[in-house]
Length: 256
Ligand code: G
Ligand code: G
Ligand code: MN
Ligand code: NA
Image (cartoon, rainbow, N blue to C red; front, side, top):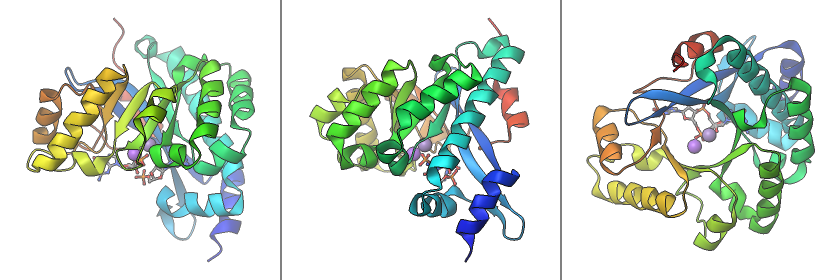
């Protein structure tokens, strides 16, 4: 497999693109933001999942260049949508940040430079970091997240519930949102244990004054369960799949 060489070429030759999955307010089903998800249109192997190429990028060090590309694309896209759609004025785009990007990459300076170059108001950019990455080196994470927050961007804990956060660290991470891992959301309406875990996370979010977003909402029954628990936000195939930019923009609400 020459994925690493291929990935180097992919970043340079425009084989990568971002799909945007709408994140919606459960109560009224309006879109409030988008999560950007990387895709690789490989010339021979077809469409490759980030689950395949992100680990390759991390192991080879390419993740820093790839991560910069993702951030720059998100910022440019959000600026375009802000210019074209008054209804986007309160929206944001969320980018996923990998372990190496957070811990080794001088991320704060990179994000600051990309915001500066693209002229995006930082409040329209959100970064998602998984709970397990944050807990790997929690003291360092507290410091880096704090400096990212100082830039004016927003932060979310991704895959929440799978990473053994201590509550004391969760309180110290200066984040805006928890994203409930989709393993708990899937079939929560028929699985009482999952239902109670989701309830606990929603209550934790309320106690810490954090937005809570359920991932992987696929059915009306799951959505009804989430609403009954007071979960605010969701994303998943029920509402929309990750979409090419031109299709995603149709989810930006009308102004007013
Ligand atoms: O979209 P999909 O379900 O195939 O994504 C698989 C995994 O890849 C998810 O965990 C997602 O967070 C991760 N991922 C998608 N895009 C990016 C990206 O741009 N950077 C990083 N670090 N991870 C990403
Ligand atoms: O780790 P992260 O939460 O970033 O992963 C997001 C991944 O979940 C993306 O690869 C995306 O394609 C996928 N995804 C988004 N919505 C759904 C859904 O409703 N069901 C399933 N099974 N996967 C989803
Ligand atoms: Mn994510
Ligand atoms: Na996730």
